[in-house]
Length: 529
Image (cartoon, rainbow, N blue to C red):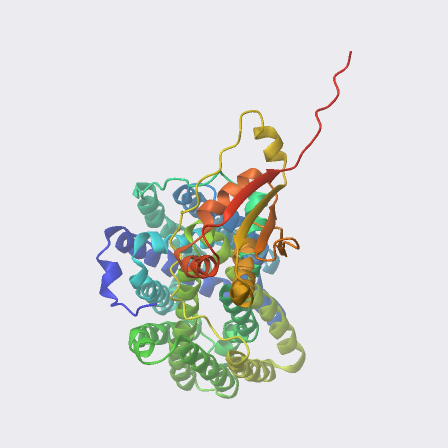
């Protein structure tokens, strides 16, 4: 994955407009986050309830991300994003009205936080899947970094602005500003006209798309590694932001103190984004990510032991910088490794693990803080985060250089008239005959067994390779697909990265392979007399 200039994506008007619209919305979101955290503390809720605020914001991603990703790969992505933005705006207005009316309670706040986050969870996989449609492959890392800069600029401005609004006019006013912030992004999305893509395969159902997503991640080692590592790291790292309102309240009795700390974290992230390209040009993704995670663990321990607000602000500058490096690089890797047909779903599974780690970690560390104290919880979470950097020794990150553009080279099979219904009932058996000399046998079987992963990833439920006892040079590769439409989708799912492996298989065989398609034979129902 090339380390392009940050200026590249900004030359694309659609990307630029969406970036600015998101900035306004994210500033409003951080104003609300400060308001929600401070309101929970003001209601005299304990550490468990304060940490549950982040759980309520993260849990919808765990519950809804996967079906949301499946829907995002089936329906019009722009319309889905527009619907979810309106959903969040409606609940943001409701929360503002109830708070201004004096009806605030811990459980009401958690419920509205969950509802707003549910809209964000449904939108997030689709929103992230749009990035490769907006910028070139070489600009993906830069685009992801710019999104990180935007988000953390909002993190720097929003909390400070939120603290000032709360100090001057109360939490209800802060929630009202957040509700208004949705107007700009809704307008931009409503006016945006993305390029309409031609569908290369039969449409999928939500259930079928979800199964396909799980299968794709299962047979994609690189994506699986990214997903597992992000979830484990976030389980420990989530304690930092979940318990930060209590840390701020310990050092400052004003909401401005909490806003200052979040603002410093955001400023640090912006500085980290500026260091992203030089770091990527000099070091591997693995080295940058592992170092960032280790440093963030040390930062968490520092947050636990430091008391002065100035010292906390300084260490959070460092924390924000390494946080951005970790988040941006993993996000760009996932986007570059997932082809368009499954991108929203893969990102949904990634978010499921990521936000699942945040939700579970926030609840766990909040409960531990209530039992053992804030300092002990943060120290142990920091140690766990630093230790998670060693995961690179077991699960190395993929280089993210694979070309996942479609490689449609198989001729589309045609069904004889009258067999359409029978074929769709499934299953379908596909066989490929190869002639391979004895001297090539071992290399051929090794290459074909590597190719099994591609077959299963793209739709095969069973796979096997067989040798003819009467003609030992004849081999039959056989795999089963649940339906005829699913096999047609396989034709559109192969990528340019698969080409090298298929060329290797065919290069070890003599002549062109012979392919056959067999549908399950069913007797016609007997007709009544």
